[in-house]
Length: 132
Image (tube, rainbow, N blue to C red; front, side):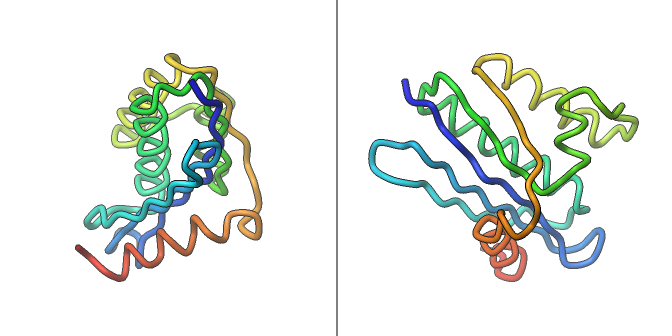
């Protein structure tokens, strides 16, 4: 069971607007996995959570032992760590689902500046501009 590292980002063109997610998962036997997905019309925070959810689902599908996530969304990182309360009903359900999945792994999440999350950001931006 591998230990994985994921860089995640979600974004929307407008808030809300056409949205996409970008996920890069490193530590895989066959090299990094890159995911970009159109997620419909969402706001930025929902897109950020959906990117995290994608990384968690992928890690569990790969029977990972551990997952460390890097995100440039301070709100997602602080809510997942329990440092911020989650008051939005839409975000609460996503937060609850992500926290539940994270309990199946050795999970950690860290905030990184956008300059350290460029590839995930690029994948998310491309997905938001190109619905499939």
